Picture 1 (tube, protein in one colour):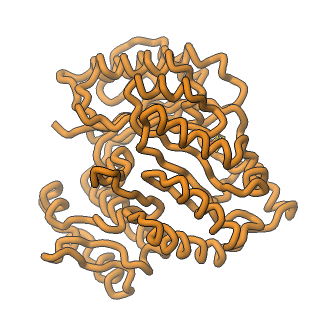
Picture 2 (cartoon, protein in one colour; picture 1 turned 120 degrees about the vertical axis):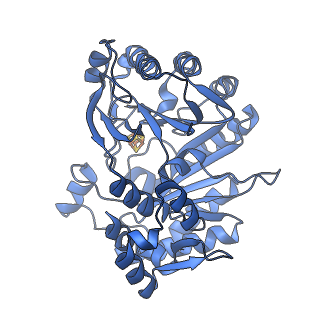
Length: 394
Ligand code: SF4
């Protein structure tokens, strides 16, 4: 049976940052105990709708700010997962956290619970940029969080950073990168700021209260990031993700996100969580209170549906092939293995997407790689213009 991943959405934040459009809320932390109860019920209901226990190799607490959950609530959730699925001995167990919400004692508790990967929302080291984004921490909090995690025995640490901010220049971005590299995390996720509709930041920029970020400068920052991280010994493996090997030479890719990029199945639990399992994509109801209400209904549902499911769509083979292409092409080294694609769909990508692949090869955005020419992947130019590539497969 295919190994699955589990995503658990924790929709609580101390403060709603002005650029964020995630499904998260400030000031409703009193819902946490009931929310966790609902989460456990959803986990157990999905498992009980199957004849066998699904094998699971990654679990990811994302948000929101999962580090706002007391250790006892995380423990309850993990016990429920452990009772319901066959967890791999080398399970990757990630928790997203905001620097400034952590303490040495809490991190030690996380380690005891089996959390072996921490993803920290650093975003920038520059105080004015952090203030612009309304982040509630400074670089010292990040440094402390990294030290405390290591002391607690959690060495697999990711730092999230954002570039392309209003008023940011290359030298300030380089300073943030340099300080971040100095902490030697195992992994970086680095994204360009997206101005999402409905966010205060986009509204202020639209009204001329803040300068529009410079998109050419953001492209330069991305190119600089690629060079800078390469110099610092990090290997880029996805358009926005870098990793370095640990002391034993083990690659520290995010195995959970690889599951998405390889278009492999995952279960999404919690308010607004997305899932892809049993040949269907699911989306849960967004509001935490509605989620809790729905999950008081213990009625059994056909896998992967639960009472919290707000949308479910069957994925036909043509859609699955297209999704496999545009997600897999994000993997800058691995790309799409033509043999693996054939094994999965009994057809070769170049026979299914004849025009798209021919055109992208001719434009120099795709290349054929690997000793036996098995790999289709983006060229460096294609990485810069990724959206122009992906759109052809949508
Ligand atoms: S802490 Fe993260 S999830 Fe929460 S509001 Fe800020 S950016 Fe969004």
